[in-house]
Length: 394
Image 1: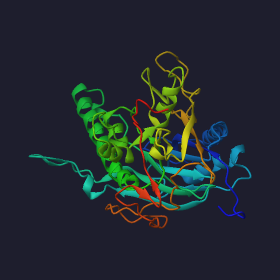
Image 2: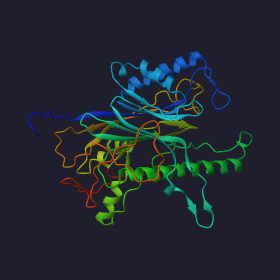
Image 3: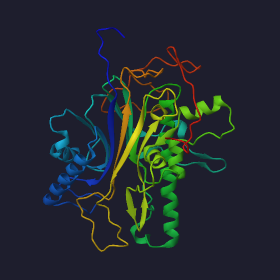
Image 4: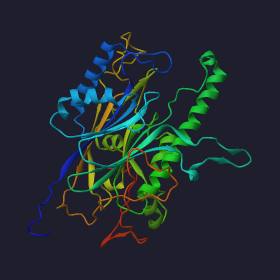
């Protein structure tokens, strides 16, 4: 480092996850029958602003946004963002259906909405044919932001299909129709997980580019649909080369990292019919896992803001319509600056995937980076791994 260069100190990045629940303009009908009064929208934006002040997230993912201007009203009301530059990425937000969004106080360098499944991710049953699903029910958003150490962080925001059965209103209490409807919901959620997994593997494989995935995945982290998305740790007796290949494309749940290093698990982001679950997740790639010798930062602390959630099986207190039925999650990442004593340096741009994903909308595609060789080298750096499993993350 030259004498004129200014060393960048280690810094903290707070990433938030926030399902705002049906954020719609006043007087606009959504789902064919519901609408908010003006006073209710005012209360909702004020409440969202209050939660944002509690979260203090530099980057925040949102789900169930019908109108981005209503979300901006809430952001402008939040004291935490006053005096700070920021950009809201909310692509294809027409008001006809809910979409995902991301707000960043760091510069956005690329943005993309992904609606179609990669062709390679189609599900085929021998003797039965293909499952006819080719699109995400809510398009995934991919955003790249530039951090203070010039690192490019790639963030995906997703909202998976809910557990609610796909069934007509007239049959919603029919036990057989509900069973079929739950199966259809599960198949859709699984198909979306497979499609996003294909995208993520191509994003993370054979490079050191850090990735964060935020979203309401509508299931706990060890559900099959969630583990399709994150990947699963390698079997202990596999050879090291195979293990390295598996670790390279895995994602770790920040809440689980927190739970495994704390005294007890008191985390939940949703209550339904008396069941407390974590449906909202912030996932990180191996670049934020301490057991990776070349990690460029780590998950230091995770907070959940769920005091507003009410267990309706225990209480007669009704839920306020301007509040979300989800808790908010914030993961605080400590990221090493330019003086970090780590051998791996992260490229300033991320890979342009060869996966057959539709052309980006609302922004330009990412620029290519210098590829890593098959030996695992980036420049003069070489990845050396220790045993990293979901059961040993600290």
